[in-house]
Length: 183
Image (cartoon, rainbow, N blue to C red; front, side):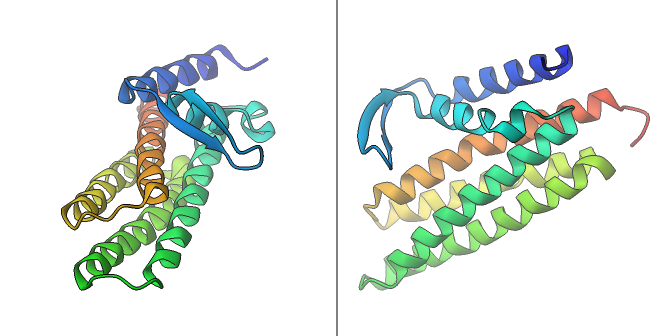
């Protein structure tokens, strides 16, 4: 059984992520190709926290590291979709927006990976590095909307990033509170 502090952290993360999504969206489970009406924030949260590694995490640092690795993996998968779409013919404005998003996702991947290594050494720095991902993804999304890029897979990737960022922020904030004198 997980330690009480870890259970409290999981609850805080869930409530934070759940509060971001007050609407249901249709989520597709790739292997089963079944459409479910479940809030996407709950799907991301449950996927992130249901891996054997996360379940076995012994402390907040391990939990944070695993969730940041999942965020990086999600960002890499979304970046691959952006790179795939860029290869297709489109307007110069759409290409500019897509390239902006490619840069935002490269930044997000690097930030998530840095946060994973910084959790032990400097949770305050990790907290900042995970927080700055959000504005990058928001700018990407704004660029896509401005040029009317219609790509549900990209919008879904952006939405999922909006869930990993608060999870990372909550974990890094918790680590700062758990060890206030160390930093």
